[in-house]
Image 1: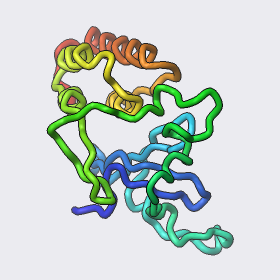
Image 2: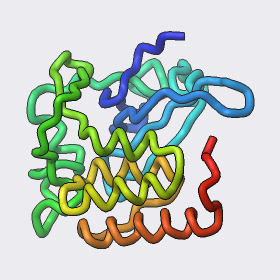
Image 3: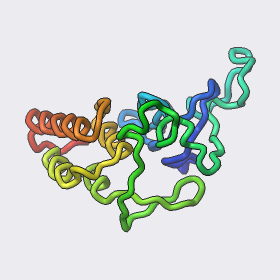
Image 4: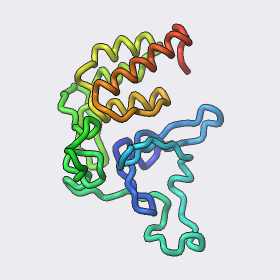
Length: 194
């Protein structure tokens, strides 16, 4: 099944908040489509919702004042507008941007297109981390990535392990991720994940 939404697309909830699509996934039990999406406001939680609930039409009797037809609708983003969602530099948060707000500057040979058709780089090591068959492989890749992992990359890595991303700087995130992987490796050994 081909889904209209793609990773990186921004959707607006009918109550006003904005969310970025992380993936359209498949439930491992019944194969039903699920939307994985990230809040574009602190603390940037990641959620999962059945695809058909995500795109459903609102009940006008239950929500008579709703300004949109569907629970989530794709947001038309103009250049520079995302900075106002609170997750990128210039969002107006006191104390300047946090580590999680810094944009990646690494270049890669792998490119993906976002909703506007513009290409953005995907880090090859991140892909290796996500496709690792054992926790030992992921630990090895994580060590190679130390010092160049962006906040967005950490969010994806933590989400892939179904573990909340801690607040803090790059070192705090790295240490928490490494500790999680080492613990999982210790208790799960070299068993392949499914």
